Amino acid sequence: MQQLATDAAANAYDYVLHVGDFAYDMEEQGSSVGNQFQQLASTSYAAIKPVAPVPGNHEACGGCAAIPNDPTSRGNFSQYRARFYSVQLGAGVTSGSSSNIFYSFNLGLTHFLGFSAESYAYRSGAELLANQLAFMKTDLAAVDREVTPWVVALVHKDWNMEAEAYAAFYPVLDAGNVDVLFCGHIHYYNRNVPYDAVSKEMDQTCVSGPQHDQTYTNPKYMTNIVTGASGDKEGETPCVVNILLPSVTCTADFGYGIWEALNSTHAHWRFASVKPDYIGPANYTDSLMIVQTGRGHVGL
Image (tube, rainbow, N blue to C red; front, side, top):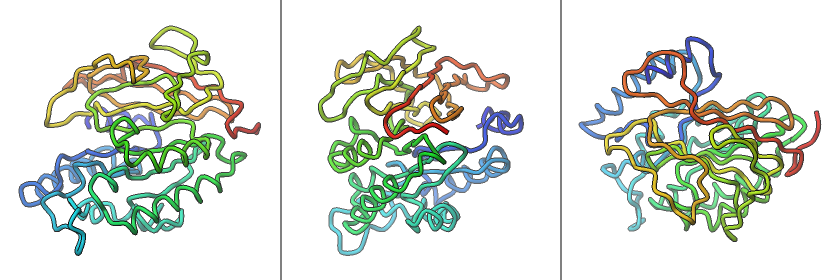
């Protein structure tokens, strides 16, 4: 949080994107944990830059009331809904979702779509599931690639973490030519080779350059990046090689990344490793340039 505040003051980024599990857990200790987090954020980076969140499993509010008449409900996300009500009134209303669970917005050359895989895992109600999926389809179909050539999805879990949700989500994201999916949940940073979540086919041919400074040129599939190493109460998760996960680079170092859409065909992602109590220039330990002239991209 200190490093985010330092970079915000230096105008190193325009927006903060939270992909869930950012307070651990808001309802704990009579909501004092959520209060402390919100106060710290609002007096540091959030005092300078707008924040766009999506809920994670730690925002489910498991100790709160379940959804009425739904025996499978495991939380109603009430703390998240209330604390980020301004997102519902802003991006939620503007994008047509009227929600802070799923919504979209444009920033520069990027269209951002935030949604919730937790809606399946924590049973947020059949109506929310149907409304979210319908919104995603309509939203992606309406993207004007001449205005926002890049489409980035924000969610807490990907298809390797919440398979049930992505049986519905992945075809929609793929058909919408989403370029990058950012998620969290696992407590490390992990960048994957673009691959098809259904067939498991990897696009190795698009990859060039050294491991920590690569270029993906016209990847056939969206790029999946797990950026869940921002700190937590459960400890770091070691990076384990898994042949089912086409990992390029992985680290359990705390940190966060910077996404920058340079033009209609080039976008740059950098991950900054932040050691505990470190304050100073960002130490970027991974860099990715995506060059895309297909998958919906048009020249500007």
